[in-house]
Image (cartoon, rainbow, N blue to C red):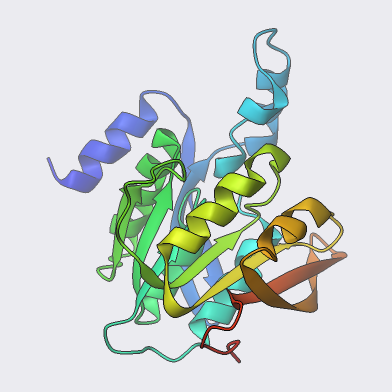
Length: 232
């Protein structure tokens, strides 16, 4: 049994899944995801012992992920540069970046998200991508990355100090961070925490999702007084 077959079997023991084509920037990815995701969410909400924060938000492909993936695909590939995707969920952004030639570590804290991400890496033969569990609480993490990316990672207000401290530890000197989120999701406390160490620029892009216009904000972030410049 191949590694892909083994991982698929492990997923299918718990979930009903489907493999869907996903086109971004002229490339079509094959993405394993939960079948009937909305129905799955509703069924979980009807149970008595689950809180909203425990729902599998990692399983959803957010509009912000499409924009961030497309943005990363337009960035030049730099020799030796290493990219870390945080809160990666099922791995769409990191896989697309890897298929565009970038060397990427796809990370999450959720074991099931990591399982899906590993399957999707194999489905797309994304040899430039590595999937790894990374805990923002891990102060022993010595590794640093030239670029850190993440989509919809600022939804949990309680994690803002933890996230900013992690970014400060994990970013190489002169490195850049690119985060994307839905524009209307306010996170003033995150940016208040962020500006203790970093400066940022915001660019808002209009997209369409299910026939409706959406506004996604992309943030280019670097340390105060540090090198680096926002990407194109």
